[in-house]
Length: 274
Length: 346
Ligand code: SF4
Ligand code: FES
Image (cartoon, rainbow over all chains, first blue to last red; front, side):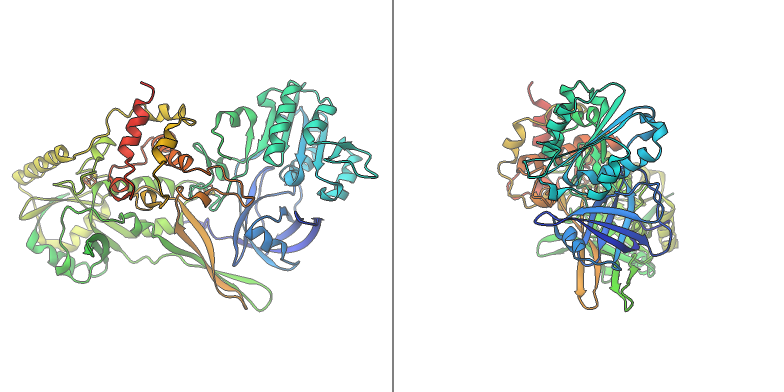
């Protein structure tokens, strides 16, 4: 019998960045495996993080596979385990199992224009992808990022986004006006419509709160994107992460193993159980 | 390998199984369950249906995965807690339970093989007892590709011939167990085999309940996701979860950390059975729940057993033991629900 699939590898937190404070805080954790190696993963995959004594939570990997010296997770404080994670400090030890799930079909996207449309913490599951495509820019057409948050204080990866603006179009938005805000005001879907994105030779990926995903997909459809051109990631409650505990299914799909990445063409066909 | 064992020699066989931990059905407070056998004379093999199925031997209701312990240097030490290798034998396993184990085998295999399940499974020899008289009024194995003498998943099948057992060794593990009994086992005469076959065929006729013509149910279910049927059928459900906990094929589980001391932190990760019939089974930490209603959970149970599992594994995830029918406190009857699906709109 090979490796025990339920036994996490130990990793140390080497850096913590407070992305967003307040009632819906987000922190980014960088980790190193204690044994020095890590695991190979693809953009879109997730890992099961253990805070020992509290349990496990499935989190998308927000670093790109091009980065070799740490694994990164950006976590919204929400439940039991994410709260415990937010209480941890640099030097603390986590357990990590994975990587789990499918990934963005990057090979199929070669030569295409890629649009990222994210809201809130939804930038995290795409963040590795943004950097992966940017790192291999010659393989793709135009890259465009649209990102919205409730207020300017809720923006994740703030400094990195400013850096990113030098390398690709980045369109930010906040939900309600604020003094000193010069970019778009309104929801992500409205921003998508406002930018009149062209479906020509394009792929659009949207991640964020369910209501945002819904409205963005509608906006993309209004812009004449085909279902096959639209991708998103699905979240469900998870425990095992490996298709055994029976918790995360949508129809015959176990999101932990068969997801989280779905094209809208695929997702549309599945029952609404997410 | 077919053999004959005189019933009076059965305790002698048990005596020779010193290396094994032996389980058999035992009655306590009117309820049968597989329990460790205290002595060789205390086993009576009969047509009984235990409350908890034999799956608990290979997939216990609670089991530890590993221990975590905080170390002095701000580190953490994990100690894997795999089950022991000691061989186990279970007597009196119903054929529908043996078949059910072949289904959990599928779930716990594959790319992410479950080491806890397989350690136990590989150490366990399942001695089935063909049902001469189906033990439950709700048995319906013959409707879901099973039979009261199905051999699937079993290592030995015993058929009660009155004074003797007709013993068929079905696997290497089964042969080994018979070998332990050595001279107690005799070669069968042709008429023994005939007698066993006759009993088996007759038993099939005695399976009382039927769930007929369900070939189209998997497809039919696809179109019934939003049907009002689920509301109607789940109305009386009190969400106790017994239909799934005591189902020999259900495998859903939960994983949690049990803390023993906080400074230094020490505890264990534990797996426990869980059920899709509980509202918090699928509830996100945000409070959002994809299956908030009883109806959506009954729909999940039926869909998993008669559609999704069929699509993934080409098998119903139901072997017809009828426990969920007999034990449901409000009388929800899976046969009737599936029949309604089958007949819906016609
Ligand atoms: S369902 Fe069939 S195999 Fe199971 S106990 Fe009843 S008769 Fe025996
Ligand atoms: S998390 Fe257990 S099956 Fe997906």
